[in-house]
Each structure stands twice: as C-alpha cells, then as structure tokens.
Amino acid sequence: MAWNMYQELNIQRSRGQAAVDIQNRDNLSGRQQDRIDDLEERVDRLLLLTESMWELLSKHLGFTDEHLVHMVRTLDLSDGQLDNKVNRPARKCQNCQSAVPKDRATCQFCGTEVPGANLFDA
Ligand SMILES: [Zn+2]
Image (spheres, rainbow, N blue to C red):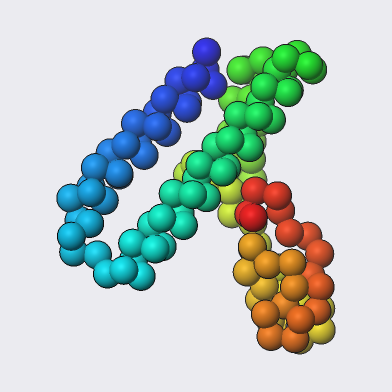
C-alpha cells in the first residue's frame, strides 16, 4: 500500500514534468530533445528494474511495504539529506585519477577498467 502511494506520487510528479516538457518541446533543440528521450528511456528502465525487484522481494521473501519504506528512507538519509535522492560519490580511475561517469565500466581517458559500477546507474 505505502509502496503504491509512493509510486503514484512519483508517477504524478513525472506526468506534471512531462506536461511541462510537451509545452516546451517546440523550443527545444534536437540535442535537448535527444537528452530528454534518453532520460525518459532511463527512467522507464529503472522503473521496470525496481518493480521487478519488488515483485521478487515481496512475493518470494515476504518483505512488506513497511520494510521498503524504511529502506527508502534509510538510503535517502545516507548522505545526511532527506531529498528523494541517493548521492553516490563519483568513482575514480586507479590509473589516471580521472572521475569516471556512473554509466561507464572503463575510464574514458585511459581505458582502464573501473570496478564498482552500480546496476541502477546503467
Ligand atoms: Zn584513467
């Protein structure tokens, strides 16, 4: 129940933003529209992953919405701010010390593999 309410809130927020995006669409450059399309695709992928995981956890392991709400709050507060975000620190290349984007498995400058990519950042 709480999970459904949380999801509904997020969906309403997304719909409101989508309405604003549609109003502004005529003013967007092609590059901006591509970025929006990429972000929408990423949100859809993350939502699918999240819902699939929740189905597994709730149906096969018995976790409840209360467990989930508690964990959401715990992770949200892990950086000291209750802001509906998880802020993971950037990874660094062990070879050249460059910051490595979340969606990369290798350093963009020297090609060194950088472990620790998170499934949710893909
Ligand atoms: Zn590097």
